[in-house]
Image 1 (tube, each protein chain N blue to C red):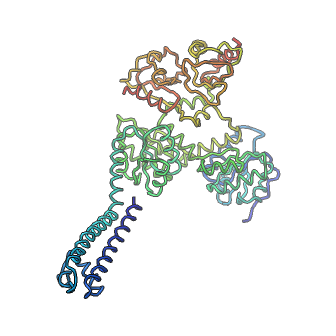
Image 2 (cartoon, rainbow over the protein chains, first blue to last red; image 1 turned 90 degrees about the vertical axis):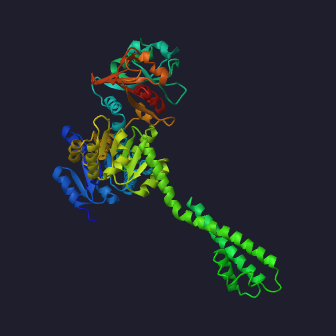
Image 3 (cartoon, helix red, strand yellow; image 1 turned 180 degrees about the vertical axis):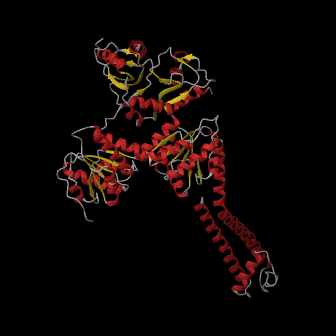
Length: 250
Length: 351
């Protein structure tokens, strides 16, 4: 295959997108919009696809984007994309094998690069991608499927979780607080510390100091000791009060 | 089943052949004026109960033969031979019809099971997305029915999902949904690979939707901007483009290396299936009209109400205190093991 390009040795800390499938197009759109919003010092984007037609389409939409017409599973093409100095790469081809190959090649050529790969089979291919050096693996089918189930079977709970994850103001979030030796909470049963009265919080989970697992919905008679981790969900103001209590600064 | 039958039909065949061989050789020894072919002929005529009468142990008995021995031998051959033949015939018939019968019986039983389902979910399409959907439904103990065209794919999925309830058929055909019990279903997920098929499904379901029954409809699309308004118009409650949401996830993974949060760890707990779930308080529930303390939710279910959603307020009340009141139509958000959540759901439904 002939590679119509001049090479991109001048690019540094750029992001390489391999192939122009549906996911890739969404990614490019997102990256380019980030670039538009933030003025300077953002990553340049570089697209590799073997179809001239697809590349032209992208060029029509984002005229300034860097493109290579070529096969991303070819190491020379990756070299030409200056992968050794790239910040990250998205192997998002439709072929699992190609993504696996690109992941491996990219990791070999650049030990520091961030690789976020796509797969449709998290169990078999996902593991292999991580072994090949992927920093993160995303499966559209899994992500989409799970989200879809949540929206159908528990719409309110999904809204609630969204509220937790989107850092709106006032910020509702989950916090893990470790009980210190000096804390007045230590040595008391859960029902005795009256956390709800003191800071408006309920304890949703507790990790005992010697355990590696959480006890969800701990019972009122559970003993809280120093070194235990208390998990609460609340607003910053409430959580700050708890942190003081847990440190013994009250 | 099939293997056993095949083995039995081979046994039957061998048995019949052996009886014929013994008969032929026996008559040949006892009736020494007949040829081997004559004896085979005599055996067949005897066992087929034809009895032309041209050859018989009686007529062809040699002068020095013992009539008792010959008659006893004939009785033996007739009894054993008839038995073997009947057995063989039975096995053959069973072999021929059983595949059909077993399948039809299973299908009938499954249709009956499906028609008795209530508040179940219907998954249209057993592809990759459908697979992850069914896995989550199974983990959270929710009944579901799969509609899938390909028999091969159904068989593949049966390996993973024992007792999979399915309708083998085309989800774009109307009667398929009736078979899947759409009247009693809580939700439908259209996740066929072709977004146009999903649109078609949503349109035909929306017509069947009853106003008094809560039926949530979700569809998968590929091109969100193009398809989303059409799906909304057709009646979908939720539309998702896996490509779009995963592109967002991928970009955020690229820039903000993810830290595993408490929620991630909780959802992937390998000791139990822990979920953040919701239950809606029905008018008949004894929770309605009580405070959290008086409803004794924690004592009865082992769960904590993390938040309450009140329709009137339109927002969540997080960390509800012991004196927070619970009213009908409130939605309680809770997190914990699925069996506890099901207990709470029963309480909330007033059952």
